[in-house]
Image (cartoon, rainbow, N blue to C red):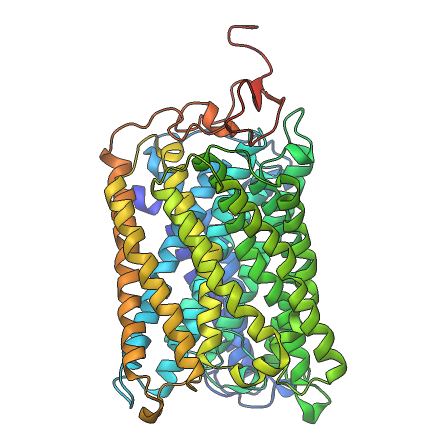
Length: 633
């Protein structure tokens, strides 16, 4: 048993990360005496300013770089590339590992896109639970006015970590859905670059470890946005590890997006033109375009903060000719389009599932497809509405206000299409459909509260209040979390070959949905009454004590509902009844073959001969096998 555990890639990777960090830190520590400097104290200030010697933060940065390399080497991510570079053949191996239990492939490097999709998804759920636990801890502090049990630094670290950890969990969830579903939906056997696909997942793991490690090495009180000058001068080394972990996760995002774009461009089944692709594939393409083009800007911003901390650069230091507002421009040029990295796949799931459970064609298919690209494009033109209070000139404020309003048009196209799809349909309401409807209702709350923050006269007083918190949570939950849960229930029979417990699935929905409505609307009410975000205490005179109690109660309800889902899916995967071949009567290619999916997806190549969403139209066919059964056998 011990040998099996030590053979797991994730265990060897974490051991390699620990060894790499120790080697990197010791290397700098040994170099310092040769420069006439004292030993580097963990997290302490440098003995001399960075231009004159190696600081302790530089020791931690080198340790983090060595730790990243150690993890990737230990996990085996580079094995095939190293063999190829040495002149050895490296054919892709398919199937479970030899001489080891089949389950171990999910804890080691595997090149099958379905395994990688499951790795992303499970990791995303685990990280989601960690971020939720952090939120519940600091929510307990806010139940009553006054200081309860947290210090200011602890509170700041908890809400900052909650923000970035939840964003990391959403990125992992996006990666899980896209990796598992896109090749299946376009009739491909795998992603275009299987090794790069595995690298994209495994490089994110040490990034997440650095963020979690930062909590225990002084934490960080910068918020998840890491604005300088605070992030550039705060002493705890936890800030540095947070910045570096954030940077590595962004690198993972870029690598995965390149793979998706090449896969969709080159590996679609014969007959699958652009307007015969499933809507989720359109959403994945739009998402990947944003990831490839926008993530680089936040990576540059994070790298500039890191070098200012470690090497004394003055990018954001006014005394050295820098400008802290520059960071905000770079950060939000990525981070507002990044909202659509989270949301577009979720909206794709909604558009994918509604026709199935309405038994009608998807209303306005081409408009929905193009609206995803429009949202991705316009998303690059609205970032500065986050900066209306930063001293921006009105000559910039007004154009950004109008561009922010303009992004509502392609989003509205999707809402009208969803209503048109359901209109006079033969609706059924299993758990996936319930979560789709819940997603629409919650995303509508986020959508209606958003323009208030995009309009200058209303944003100015509401900026940095709990109104923003309520809006952002509604957008993220409605745009991603609810659709993500809908997708998990919908494709669960495809992944496992078994059905989940429908009663527990509906219990999850009926706990989570009202709980979230209460939480989001309560946060907006607190903001309207003057509650600032990112503060540990508030004035009892605001009259929001009971509102904070309800917000915290709803957070517990949401947490319990997610635990019910985890129990449902884990127990059902082990012992539930076998699922039908196509329990949802879907037209999508993956439901036309046995469940779970075969190793190579499709034994016979597919040909697309019709529309993907012609539900209810007699005689309509979407895909057929290129070679009928028995041909060539």
